[in-house]
Image (cartoon, rainbow, N blue to C red):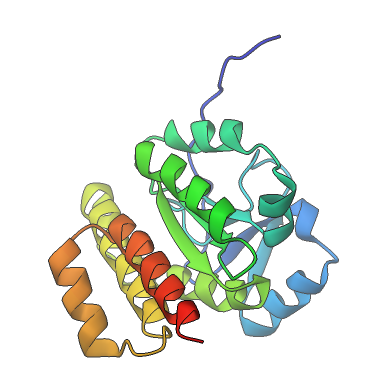
Length: 201
């Protein structure tokens, strides 16, 4: 069996504000929700990538079903890890049903230095993707500065998600971000606070 991991090629050219979508999503209910928010284009030649909200941000989406069924996405993560001059992002469902599985995915992403963004379910995905696309239109043209800016802005997106936690407002979420630094650490904080809130009910 060939275990060679072929790196993902350079990201495609994408008009500002558009999202490039893998052909496998065409005709789905999710596609209709995505198109209701903004402009999308399709491509059948972007390998394992589900979405490109920008040329430097390949995105893989891991839904609740994939997490619960134990689908192995290790190979996908390894491919994303080998991306050069881009900011690969993993978006995954993180809810009461997927706490354990999300934690396992989180550990893998952390060890591979991949950005992981939690969402409640697929209904939150269209808005997040277009937020990412909008952010890239505001980034400088320098690819190295753009990569750094993208990471910062993705952390800001995570910050907004964490303000949805009961008892955590914008001020407290900002304190957590300042204290723990890298956005990956916030996922652990989110999990601990979520479990703490659950135990109170």
